Length: 292
Image (cartoon, rainbow, N blue to C red; front, side, top):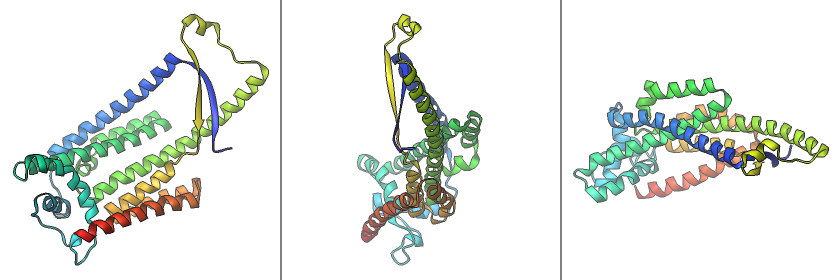
């Protein structure tokens, strides 16, 4: 089948608007449920690991207030971790630093960073739940239940740790992989519909039914473009970001995603999706570490 196909369906403008509104409201409800638990973690979660203090919080405090400690991994002698990850957190607290200073602004900056992490975590989890709902509503409901009440998700979602950042990236990668699988299933279904539609057009011309004329709604023809999805490339990109900026050992969870991409898409597209973000992150990391 061609990478680009068209599907024409006849529907009323009212039905189309209601469909879009239901999709938006469903996404908003899922995000609100997950964000409620994540923002609770932002304000009530403890600092469970000393690595969170010396790998992120203290270096961020140094960048904002010119005083702070750092772990040996960030030191110029060993250079095991990049300051690029620390800078991503420091930019969040920078506006608070200018508005409130280093006195009372430190606590506000700390919770501002945590709230943003809560938003990013909730967005990624919401994406995963939505794709699971497309497979089977019971599967999506189970995933939503687990992500909402799991202790590990509550603790790690707002922790300023590289492995927590890697967790968010892997979640996005898994969701994108499921999105591509759903796309393949939908594309096959659209292909069958297109074939049936072409047969119908040969037999008789399409016309508006009497019931639609009585309703008085505007009848429109929708054209759905089914193109080759880039979801697997996005999955590989998220894996690269999680491994290089976050936790290198997260690469173990990314190997199956890369293998799946090579099997379902192609080795060439998978290689491009891995090499390009790797080069970009390497350049940015080198630039940041030159000054720190």
